[in-house]
Image (cartoon, rainbow, N blue to C red; front, side, top):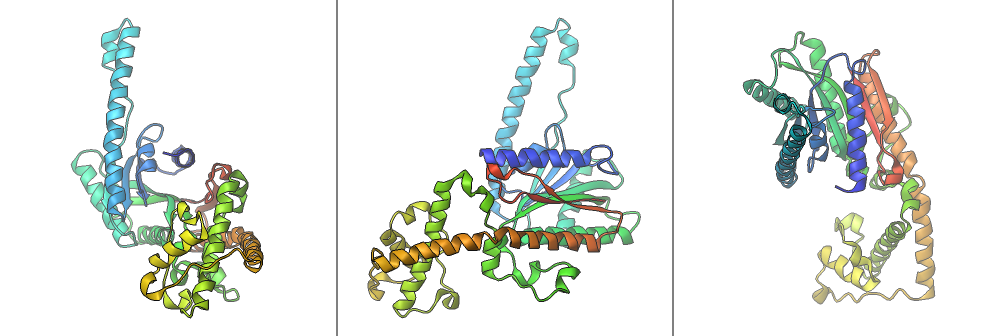
Length: 378
């Protein structure tokens, strides 16, 4: 786990732990659903002290879940080894070794994994199945089990799916009392990310307030801008310079293709996709890799890499860099609009007495660009 991810997991656990403290929640919550769990970093952290939760980790990617299960097994092995060493040390240090040997080990929760594409229908079904299995194993008592929904950087449209699912569960709980499911949703803490992967039609705007304003539509360019994080640039100028270079090369690529009679890529649908950083070591290397990725046959199309050393092109590259920086400065404005729309959506749909918050969870100086959590406690 990187330092950035460790910071995010630690801060998210602290936020959730505070939500579960007396006074933070009206009920005792020990069951947490981690949506978009990925490799399971947050899930594992929530299952051990101080939270000690029973965790359902959901992800739509089989490879991510397989990786998470592998690391869970390794994690358990380490936990068991450490517990044995600690117990042995206690036996040696204490004269009353026999009584110390009988002392209970720290409480540790469990983690269950499931691959699903989350929506307002699949999420309650997965939770119901999980709670039923917990009851069958005598892990969970009878009665309505309170559940907390969470997600650490739920990607693109997944955040919207979680918000819609949460509101659907809340409405269902208002109309079916007592709960017929055997569990209730008592809160949510979710941090979104990857605005560039949002569905413009369905994910924005969500709130009635924004919908009633003069038409606001997020195009692809807006969503990419929202994903920028200008406050973190000064932490790593090398990465920032490379990012500028990538934008310049992509713009020059488009110009060269159009100059050679090819249809603009926004019309043809051809995409370069993600290339590794070494692809940008030189213009010629980038150009060759990019046109291959876009499906051009170099031999039949005979597209020689253009030379970009002339004074006019160098001047154009500098102007493109400046344009990119100026555009990125608008990124926080677009992100704030998306976050405010999501907060308003929850505020409009939930009862007035329910607290809805936007919380700055992470320190952006660690590289955690998306640092705002939407927090609701029923």
